Image 1: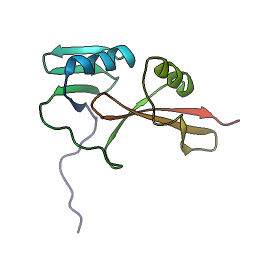
Image 2 (image 1 turned 90 degrees about the vertical axis):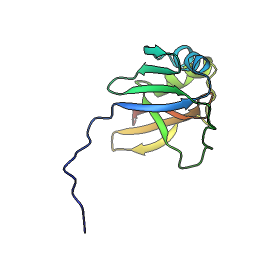
Image 3 (image 1 turned 180 degrees about the horizontal axis):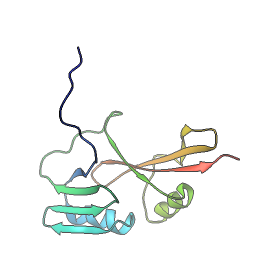
Length: 131
């Protein structure tokens, strides 16, 4: 028996990542990933990501172990290959080169995964035309 909710969730507004040191995390996200800071208030930092806000929240608790099912924050980029090369120059260490994750008749979706300083899983994603 299905249950229907009167509440409908729609727009994603925040993604919160827990970090040990917000100053070091900010350096990574701002200086290496090129993200703009919307708000910085002690142990809380908000970064501009378009329609949603990525928030970095300081914690003294142990950050969860990474598993194959740990959520990944994915950033869309205009040119995956250029973005990958530029981020590598900034010192970002990727798990592997951009690889195919989906396909349409006209395009191939490529993704490249990496982690922040606290082990939060991140990825860049972009579509390239098929030849």
